Image: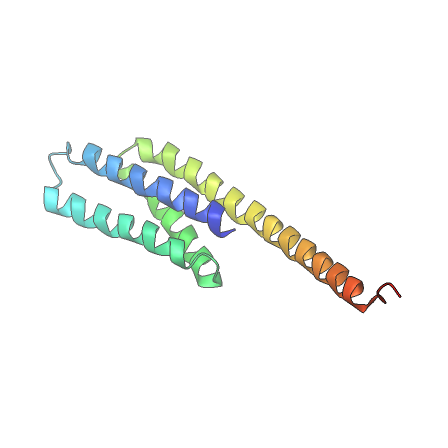
Length: 124
């Protein structure tokens, strides 16, 4: 799960940065406001890569997805991009958990096989 979720979050890092460049064209927004908000969001997207395996990390990731969609109020294309990344986030969490379960199952089978091989009597 960590790899899939981290990949999605790193993609969001770049999208947030590009959205900041687009938002700078808005005459009602100051450069410092745009880059403060974008900088915090970009930092969160990278920081979340380290905590995605914890339950709070997934919840914070969902909060970031909602914030990206809400950014469409400032940069209209973010409605679409935020929805795309929310779908990617869902897929990363959903399929990442399935992959983790499969890895654990295979590891348990390998451990059982190794234990059975070591318990079997050797050649006489």
